[in-house]
Image (cartoon, rainbow, N blue to C red):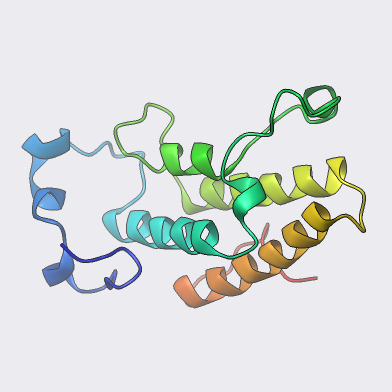
Length: 150
């Protein structure tokens, strides 16, 4: 076993035993992330999840948060993003862009609902900058139209 943050996405020698065995998870659907993209997205999600400022984003916003679900029509959090990275999930990501869109939606929701000078809004802004920098590091050969530092 090799931790997600430590394993390289280039070296097939680092693949989990069952990544290349169809009986482990069934045949890989043609409309899903490649093994390399899957590992890179998992790495990004884990880096976000383990960031010191990410605690407010780990789980869904409490239903007790006044008016949140009336204001935010597409709520998303890191637990849902991580579930969608699970290849056995029927709503599994089929592109890196779809994963990025969900992460950026999480930050947009944060900015929409919270006062700009609030602690959570500041954490969201800092975490978004961190994510965009990590995205460039994890996908150095790609640019994403929906993800740029402004």
